[in-house]
Length: 480
Image (cartoon, rainbow, N blue to C red; front, side, top):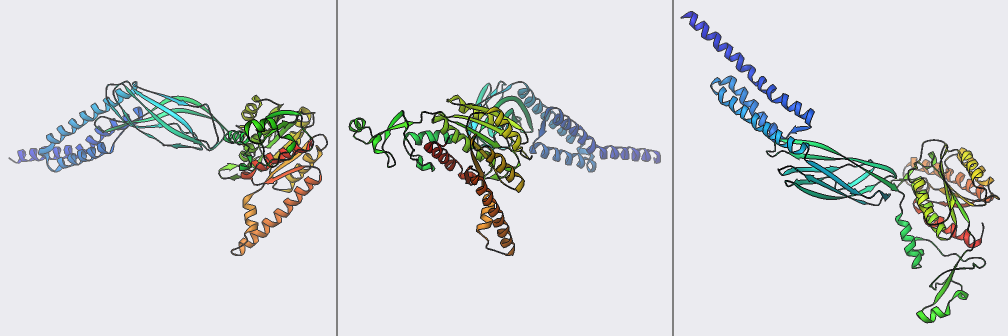
């Protein structure tokens, strides 16, 4: 009897040790397929499946204290494992080769202007797929909406629309579409990426060009700050008939058209000489400051393109040179509608660099490639005495061969600090320092004017109207 009791005790202890290892064995049995599936097939358990696993593990632990329930718990565990495996295979097989996607988007758009993107997802499998779709989003872009709820019927397709708002110029590539599908029993999430390449070029804001053309046709340019300038002398080439305005010469009234329309109508003339305008855009460290989310270079570029559009409409030839520590792009001056596209393509992927601008190389390149007298418009910023001296020397030295114009952008933070010294003592010191810098800056601008340089000194977000007005004044006075 003693030996039998010892044998039964040993068997019981062996069963207890076996049952005590059972939770860990069951955890390994379930965890290994999960880890392999997540790593290899990008399929991950849902919260429901994790909750089921937690209950299964608790049941395995319970068998340690109640060995009689081992068979029932083991049967339940294996049943759940079989169900999870079938659910896993169903979502994997239906999404592995049966999903296709396509995207429709314009190849170009303007900075800050939303562009629509159409995404179509097709399901070739025989089950309904539920999940989410997220299209690729380049850096500095905003998407509305960010993702789409997805419900794909068997052998069906679904289309989505979203608006992309670019926050930076340049050439971008949309490379893929990310999809997340939920398995039929809601135990698994599967993530897939479908390669889908599209190119998107973000150009400077071109909406202002169409706005200008519309206001010019209706004689309402004053709404955007562009004023009409009286011309000195007479232009000989007839351009069009338009409504009379207060600044028009009464000798230009076309009485026949006035009688026919029963409204005062004048003849508008255009200059019979084709002049040349060349923009020099500084892409160095002077233009890296930001205002309203755009760099100084962005503001200068938008205004330069606006003035280029006006100049081309006036029959002038327009060119552009982008530089920092070297010359990055040069478009020779030409006229015609196609020149506007060349200018936009030349500058849309130019960004400010944290390097010292080489004005000597830029003006040397200009001298070698532009012999005829032109209006040279340099858009830059004045920060310290070194770059101020370079701007003064090189821009002032071309006076005589060319007509120089300096576009010097203001730092609104600096002006606000000088204008509002209220507050504690530190604000007073800050205001005094800002005022000292502004006095020095004002002296630099006066030195440029004394050397015959035309100046446009304004805040970057208010640059367009003063720049266009200065150009129209030059045309009116025949300074070129």
